[in-house]
Length: 291
Length: 326
Image 1: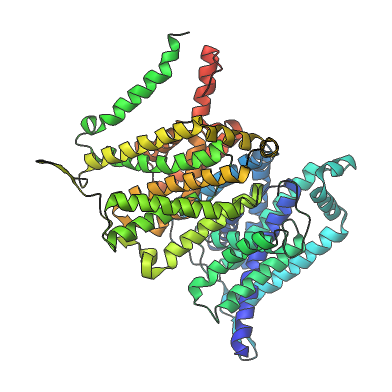
Image 2 (image 1 turned 45 degrees about the horizontal axis):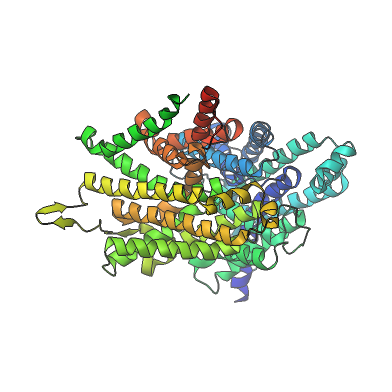
């Protein structure tokens, strides 16, 4: 039992890492732009596709493919922010509907370009096995957890101690006050959007070799990321990390007791229960005016 | 000025005549009728969402989940319990309405983002039930063998709905009834209250409007219409499949309402016709159709959030200088 539990906890941390990458990006964007980017899942998918494309057609180097997918997602993020979200600033309904349009546009563009069938992405690190006690995991599996945790630490330090990170936090707290004290709010918004999209791209690039690269691969991380955000508390960065990880581990461990069919329903249950009984989430930040 | 005012009505009458005579002018092209039936089905769900989103300002991202609920209730009743089409349709509409009211009551605790996320979650939950409850819904493979409505008989005349033109008239009749219902609702006190909630919920509440009650009513009504659309769909295609009611389909319904013109009576019809027929006319593959419509949705949000009906209305005002009702 103990071993099975450990295995599921590590599986859960891996899935949770992916949820965290999506959730963090959405929380950063939500903080400074005050909009939930429902298109974040399809950006995750795009990260996987750009990665596998670069790997197979440019150079068979995994780190390079990851970097390229992160870089192209940053460019795409800047474009989306400039062309779609910024012009619609202040109109939540239209921003959300535009993000739905982006989902349709990008997801079907991917199908049109790469086809609807899943692509295989063979990378050496998925075959290299690492032993923990009597359990074996692929190096890739553990790598996802390590990279995510390292990134979370870096991002945490950046937000807490750097000048620009402080500007991001200030803008999240009050855009008007940030403008008053001379923070370049537009630059903060652009950068946060780009960082959010880079995290989604990284997530897609990381999970691609482990499973498959397919047009709907971002749907689950999007929904679970949203659930993680709600669990942790809307707009809270530590909340998004803890919420995403907690959700991943809970899901995995639940497979020890429940049929696997029910695993995905746990996220929905968590969302509904949290919203009903503790809408401010575990990390209870204030609820914004529009809640 | 009086003379020109007749133009929109004339256009409406012409469109209606065109639709009523479709089996004549499209004789020999069953494909056209097939498209028109699909447009009817899409527009019924879109009318439901138009009442919620266009008139009530409630952005629901799980609309097709309720269509699926109605569709599966009716399909199971018709296939397993051998119910007739009409009793199954009625039961499905009531079931969707009740589910909509109950789920709506939970969702209305939230506004803005949170409301959208909860409706998305419930849409996914309903889809997960259809996809996984194998004993009842037959799971992801779908529930085949859904019957068409039983034939009508008067003496020697038999109208069988296995034939496309007859089913088309049935779908058209239901669609026209749904649009008539939309007209009545929008012109009634309910419609005016919804408008006040959309424009300023706090003010409406301050003026003594019981906001929750009216939101629940419109959510139930919208869900019931989604259910009717779902029942018609599974009876037309003769199979109920979870993929027809997933998140992407819910997004597509939002697309139809917005592109057609949210908050306009003809919006859902314009959106549904365009959504179903334009890609066929351009002979596009399915993925390119959604690439184009996705891009169109973003562009419309940026430059014409009032949709095609709204653009036409603005143009009409320019021409006539008229500022009367939509």
